[in-house]
Amino acid sequence: MTDIETQKDEKRGRSLDNAHWTEVLIQAMPYFRLWTGKVVVVKYGGNAMLNDDLKAAVMKDLVLLNTIGVHVVLVHGGGPEINKMLERVGKESRFVNGLRYTDDETMEIVQMVLTGKLNKDIVSMLLQEGGRAVGLSGVDSGLLRARKIEKEGADLGLVGEVTEVHPEIIESLLAKGFIPVISTVALGEQGDTNRYNINADTAAAKIAVALKAEKFVQLTNVPGVLKNMDDPSSLIPRIPMPTVPQLIENGTIAGGMIPKVECCMIALKGGVPRTHIIDGRVLHSLLLEMFSDRGIGTMIY
Figure 1 (cartoon, helix red, strand yellow):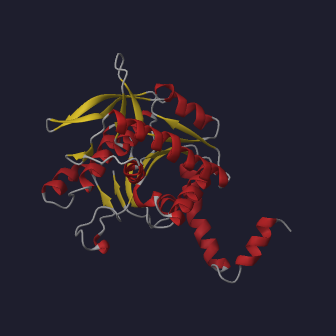
Figure 2: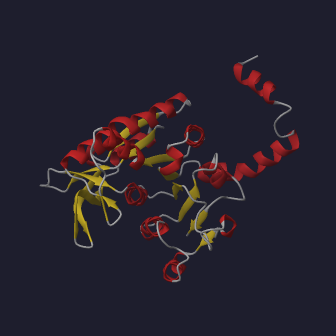
Figure 3: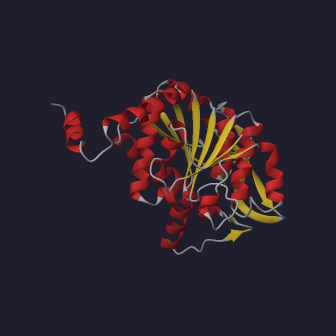
């Protein structure tokens, strides 16, 4: 008996009965066919990166998607880890209008944490789950180019916005069956020798556009867009893109949800047909969204 068969025997009696398993598999089959061969870009960050059980679940989900032939791309942030490292070296985190001020020293730490530690940690976890993954940053092969931005007239240092995406390296890896894992440090535009700290949500949306992705998913630490922010049961499961400005105006979409929805809008306007904001605190939320009738979170389409 194989190890897998032994594990199956050990789990019998405490799992779903055969009828329920059959129902689950039958429900999932059309979605397997739907997503095989399609590109799905996942933005990964927040609480889902801080909890070991959630991390393991996300890695398993990604490896399953890759195994059945979904071309999955993972774009990650790392704000909490950057904060920890800045504290460790005695440097105070400074924010201007909600964005991290990034001087030269902070930029070195951002690169070290995002491309040197977190990116390789994620690749390692995917490999441990049996996946095939390769770590990249926006610098590799000139994947991301950016220009310096200011917000409301304030200088943010080496904070940039993506102006160009050159996805050839990602497409090459996907064609060979790898999961590209991308940290969002970008090169400056031609003639600019700086490297820039990029918002991972907006970078992921623009990467989804460049890859002509079928789906763009943001794993967050909220259930999705709520009618009442204090009531998780008030989730809005589907939002047509033309209604978004009205929902922002009336305060339904507010605070930190606005930039996440704006990233969905970037992807939709760039040709991505489906965008999702889902709760990364729910185990296997990615699989629930992609392979079940119930779905999870909010779809903006």
